[in-house]
Length: 182
Image 1 (cartoon, rainbow, N blue to C red):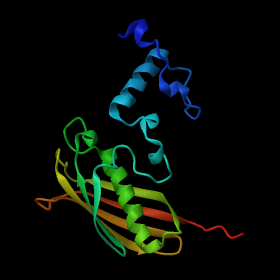
Image 2 (cartoon, rainbow, N blue to C red; image 1 turned 90 degrees about the vertical axis):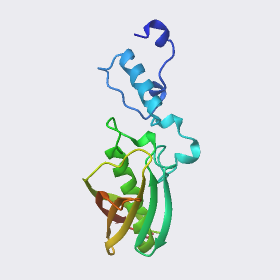
Image 3 (tube, rainbow, N blue to C red; image 1 turned 180 degrees about the vertical axis):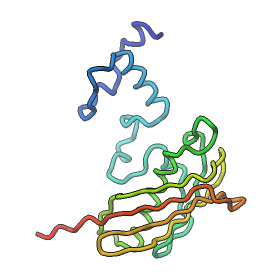
Image 4 (cartoon, one colour; image 1 turned 90 degrees about the horizontal axis):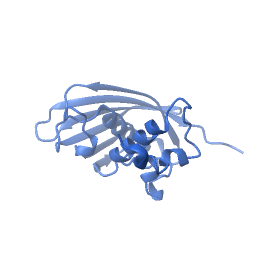
């Protein structure tokens, strides 16, 4: 395929000190994997340093989600289905839906749990009812169902903006990390 010239440069995936690479993978396979990850824009070394911080938006979702309304226990965001988050069939990719649902759930939970609380995802359930087409505007409504001392449960609805058609629903359980007392 690429021959010796394609293998002349070492893939960046090999330069990572945190990446564990199986000995069963050939250098050619690693090179092709490296190229695929770069072409999809999901390779970690392509992220600017300001986006490598904890809880920052991923490379795929940071440019497509805009907050519309914030109220205690409620959050509405506008999502534009751009080509970067489409699957092979032309609909919104399920992984992108899950990633956005997690972000919206955390943001919604922060409206009632408080800024000092660290939250982590314990469970995320998704129902894929229909596909969001390319360039569609989707309203993501998040609302807190329950919030207590140790956990917060958030429900989300993804509706097409123009027709109000329900395309995805999600429910997330977020656990509160206890604040350390010294």
